[in-house]
Amino acid sequence: MSRFLSTLLLVTLMLSNAACAQSSGDAHLINQALAAAPDEMKEAARVLAYKDDGTYRVVREGSNELTCVADNPGADNFEVVCFHSDLEEYMSRGRDLRAEGMSGGESVVARGEEIEAGTLAFPTTPTTLYIRYGDNASYDEASGEVVNSQLRYVIYTPYATAETTGLPTTAAGPGAPWLMLPGDWRAHIMITPPSENQ
Image (cartoon, rainbow, N blue to C red; front, side):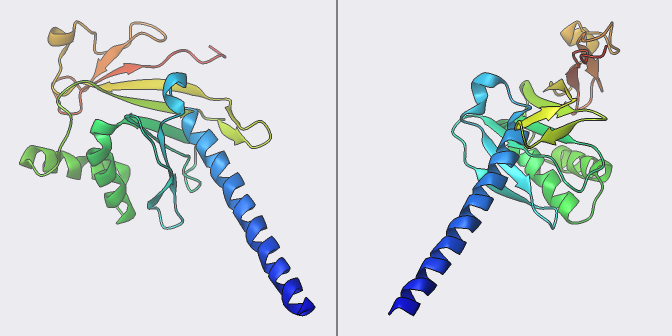
């Protein structure tokens, strides 16, 4: 009987340690991903993380309109993104195509063809994407923070032009908003606040 209890205790401890390790790892992924989110939206945002095969898993379910994605450990540079739920179908399709072996650029072209064909939905109203990135950016597990990084804001405004928005098509200065790809389905307002070193 005592051997049975000892074995049961050992198995329980092993499972408990595995669960703690899993929770700790997921906590770091959540911290990473939410580093790109506005403070007031972090608590209820959904969080995704990369799996070894390049697909994604849900780390945490959300209850607001924001989805955040942790850094891709297989990429050269650190980058985490958050996007509005109206972009989910477009982003999900991109994840699927990249998992099938397409490059990021190839997936954009393929999705554009699907949007034009009416087989893939893309928002028709302004929709926001948040990106935290940096050449020297990284995640510090001790502090639970992303360091040496900066934010970029992308507001998709399909088919917008300089005339319809009153925005220039090049940045007028550090942090100034400008319109990229005017007239295209991917037209978007770019806002890149200066980094602390600028």
